[in-house]
Amino acid sequence: MNHSRSKHPVKNKDNDFKDFTTLVKDEMERKGITRAELKNNSKLSNVTIGRILKNTNNKGYGYTATIETVIAVAHGLKLSEAEAQELLCAAFPQWKVGLAYLGKRNGLDSANEILFDNGFDTIGD
Image 1 (cartoon, rainbow, N blue to C red):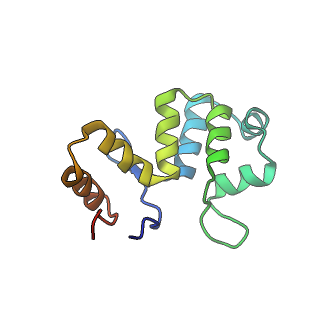
Image 2: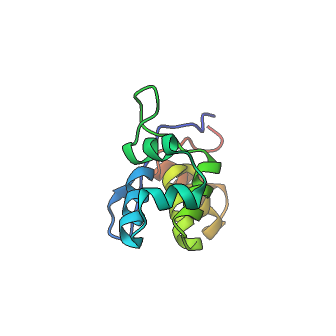
Image 3: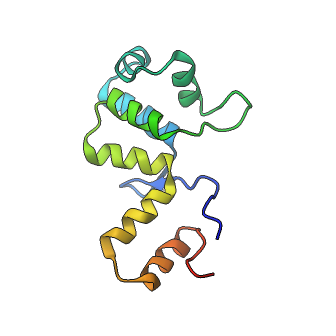
């Protein structure tokens, strides 16, 4: 069973898809947090902040966050628990699927439906 997939951006309240970088930029703008403030609050390097904001890594591909980076950014942006959860799901779309299942817990058929609807392999295939 292959659980690794390319990034699936999460939908926000307006049904728009937002990736990690877009969500970080939107939260910075909404909260009036500058790049320097994000760096100072998160303790991330200028290089990492730049890669996040440009959505790139040093090999020319899109930025892939680590759990440590997500936590640091959530702290740096002073996100609420719900906002941090949205950021986490933008960085790791498969977590959104897990959270959806945990909200229902109706057995493997329900889990497989959620997995399938979100583009992931189903259990037992």
